[in-house]
Amino acid sequence: MNFEEIVNISQGPLAIMNPVDPENILKLCELAGISEDSSVIDAGCGNGTVITSISAAFGARCSGIDIREEGCLNAVSAVKEAGLEELINIYFADASEYTPEPDEDYDLAISLGSSQIWGGIEETVSGLKNIIKKDGKIIIGERYWRCSTLSPEFSREWPEILTEYEILQICRENGYEIHAVIHSAEREWDRYESAIWANCLKWLSDNPGHPQADDVKNYFSRIQEEYFAYAREYIGWAMYLLTPSEKYQ
Image (cartoon, rainbow, N blue to C red; front, top):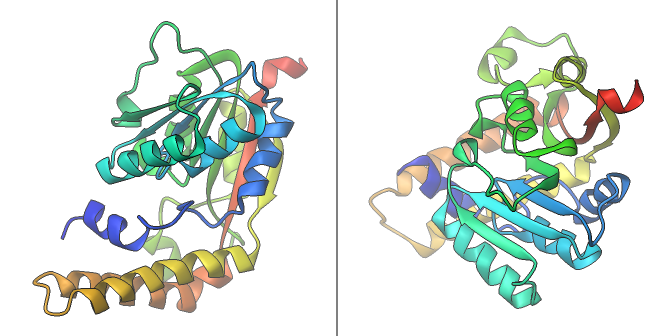
């Protein structure tokens, strides 16, 4: 079973595929000055919950991109259900290869838990910078190490996770200041991870004897062991609002 199939089983049913409360996303959008005159793009939009929430709250025009066909179909359904078809476009594509149309001029780019699309946080900031206006803003949401001194075993397991100081330096080197940050609470982590476990167990219960059941079982066991062994203690998740540094010069 490939990774996309595992994601569809474990996270596909989730409204937001990250450990974050929807209202916190809207708080950052408010700080970013999003209004009915704004345009927003969500790279790795999942099931479309974030962009439908933004359009509903602010009246902004939004675009969502996701490489998972199932996610895009769910996002289209969410947009229709919310009655926001005139404000939102969904693209089934690789966000790292996306080039905006001439009439697509984005004020804000969002990437929540999607830095793997570009290959890391630094590449994500650089990639998003290329699809927004010169004075556009960015919201990234990612994991970070809660402390700088870690067991070598843990740091080798997750080489892509950075400290928040490293994230700060990456933002500055790419011409941005961190305007605001919202850290996810432990209850948000617990709720998110528990939902993933529940989805895996439901699939296993609904598909007894499936030829690829072992793949799901192994995935479930691995992520649960990682969470209890060290992830909950050492890894945090946060959203960062980035604004161009030149604005303050």
